[in-house]
Image (cartoon, rainbow, N blue to C red; front, top):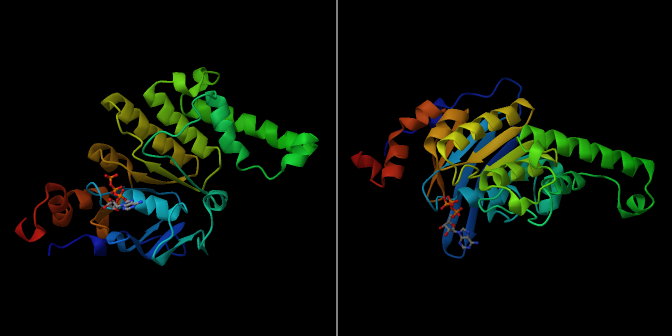
Length: 272
Ligand SMILES: Nc1ncnc2c1ncn2[C@@H]1O[C@H](COP(=O)(O)OP(=O)(O)OP(=O)(O)O)[C@@H](O)[C@H]1O
């Protein structure tokens, strides 16, 4: 068995508590063990990459921490609270937002309206105050519009604000998804293959955007197949293979880890 970098993972700052903890999470689909006793932490303010060959369990991991699936055993703790059996919208309100591998926008709504849907999800006032146009609702509405415009600007989409989502280019739609997720004011933003289908220039731009998002105070969990992007933008990386965590560490450690190299080359790591 090749040595992994588990022991060389940088220790969190003294006194810091992780934003998210996966604690011995196992998730089975019938006979398939999609996640097998997986534990890792995401520290506040870091960009963590989640990588692994096809079918390794990355998306299942996202699904476990956004409430799409319940772990068969183990638990996810976010901001000090176990997610338990909370529903997706409740987890979103706790501060976890995500984008999807396949773009899921409201295609017949404008870019701004798509972002406003995200902002609305965060509003505290209900239908009655909306109908009565109570001051608190009006304030939330104005704040939602301000935030939508700020996020469209951030994602370089201000000039597309009034265009229907379906008329946006592929890259613009991907950035709009990120803007919509950010509109829910998440503490943790989970990006599922945000660079899929991007050319090198778009990938570089996305790396800059991810850094900007972190600099705004978000923590980022990134699933991505493009190794240059992952190595270039993440602080730490967790590697899965066949549902198990096989390594964890800084990009330069992961890049040279024999178990990771073996997993990607599809050879036995004893032979590597
Ligand atoms: N809803 C489901 N029902 C049954 N099996 C599933 C389901 N979702 C995922 N799996 C299986 O769990 C395993 C992990 O899949 P998952 O999609 O999490 O991998 P992944 O690392 O995200 O792969 P990719 O990089 O190809 O997207 C695979 O064997 C997959 O077939």
